[in-house]
Amino acid sequence: MGSGIAEVLARSALDVLVVERDQEALDAGRQRVLTSLAKARATGKISEDDSRRALDRLSFSIDIGDLRDYPFIIEAVAEDHAVKLDVFRRLDEVLVDGGAIMASNTSSIPIAALAAATSRPENVIGLHFFNPVPVMKLVEITPSLLTSDETLATARRLAGERLAKTPITSPDRAGFVVNALLIPYLLSAIRMFEAGVATAEDIDTGMTLGCAHPMGPLALTDLIGLDTTAAVAESLYAEFRESHFATPPLLSRMIAAGQLGRKSGQGFYSYRR
Ligand code: CAA
Image (cartoon, rainbow, N blue to C red; front, side):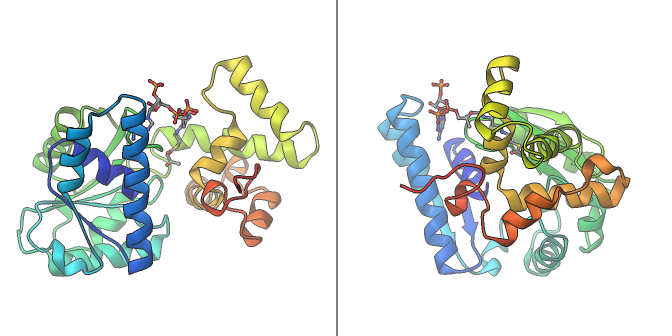
């Protein structure tokens, strides 16, 4: 999602520095932006000139220290509590501007926990985008108990005015609004498939043609990533202890087998060419 967020920011005339963990991730991220912009050009969503200008506003680095002078950071690392806490601790060390805002694209980890890892919890907020970011209009904005009104107002202005997304304010509880509803639905579809009730194609066709969803739940799980879906489910289960948030065995086994969805080439469907 980081590449989608970077693309949307750059297309909104903001200078963006993308920090990746290593050169391989940097190359892959840059390639994702190029591919997405090519699609936007091909479908008439952006002109050649605007696409070039957006690319010119993007720079890449593998040194988190290069973020030191930036006023607004959006973290979009793996949906893993320890990894995110580590990033927030490191950001807190490098940021020079005491007012710099640290936002997280987490979909399930408490914003209060990320805030507590920093020396400026009032500047930490949730800014949750949806996949694919250039296409999806929603951003969930989640202040923690410690977030200042000023940080919330700045985040709302960025999402709603500058990026022209539609922000909703979500509570700081696992899954916020959207994933608290979406994840049980995806897990139910996986359980239905696992029980042999219907084929993947029939489950997805049922929901696309029967309920006018743009894609079915198994294709959507492939798009989100099976590992990310399971990580969000685990956060929800840890918070609420409700059985509809429990990870189905098939999901765990597919992850163990490296079948992570689109990004790995195989999930409930195959994406290999
Ligand atoms: N910039 C702007 N527009 C772009 C673009 C880009 N970089 N790339 C594609 N588009 C546009 C296309 O022009 C096209 O526009 P039109 O509809 O006006 O023609 C549209 O996006 C979709 O085009 P595609 O041909 O790529 O594909 P599609 O029609 O098969 O739709 C999809 C694909 C957008 C993914 C659609 O199936 C969909 O909306 N699926 C549901 C996605 C969803 O639910 N996402 C949320 C997941 S949950 C999440 O992300 C959060 C979490 O925490 C887990």
